[in-house]
Length: 344
Image (tube, rainbow, N blue to C red):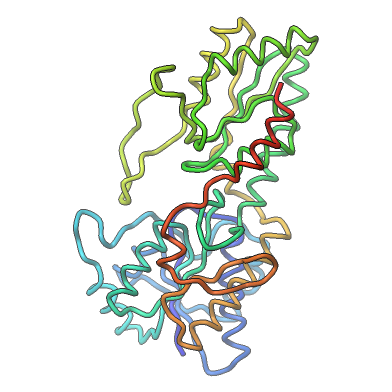
């Protein structure tokens, strides 16, 4: 069998571990070869690829990012139908099936291609941990650890200067990173996309905390968090990408300004941004990514296409792509309620 691999969307710690695992599993089975398409779906559309071998995938397990590169290219952008171009490339490269590794957008393309007869097996990837069908996505634990380390460091400088520090983390649709990192880092308020916030209530909580003798506070906010309608004017969203997503980032700046104005406490913002995506993956993500890669090869070798490998409890399973992409996995309300016990 000859498999094509690609990594699409945002880069993520653990991508290289998946690539390595697919290749190693296939080589161990014998008679298989692999081609890696560069820059996500762009590489498939442009027939830009290189062979993946034992030598080219050796030593990449602890590396962050992706050796294949990535992009947010959408073969169906603007009403286009990239199915024919994808099929031509696969035929020219003698590729039997594709293993796309990505989030809702990359796998959404995979689902459309599957519906048009292109054999695909998806691997879920997003640091936001918001993909349905799987309990956890690799990259999430690394992002949480990076954010937690940052919050720990910001505690000391916030206390030294008697400041409120707003920490903006990633999370377009969901608050998984914000809530996990905020809980682990002892944040005094956590704002997430699933729960529009009232900044007057946040400010009142911070004032009560300071009146109780605490001279500093940490507020963690997901980039996609938004205020209750009519309570706070925020900057308009910027231009959109090929999948229609606006570039986020900046809610932390608004909160810094408004918290200081409403409380009188000196405030500062730290936007972690792409720091959360970078660097070596933690052990959990390396292991999960490796298990996903092995399972993806096995599914493709068995002809079980249109599926996505997933973690359910402690087991790796296969779920239909259509089911996995039906709706995003929102933050567990019970987890957020637990976090609220420690606010202020």
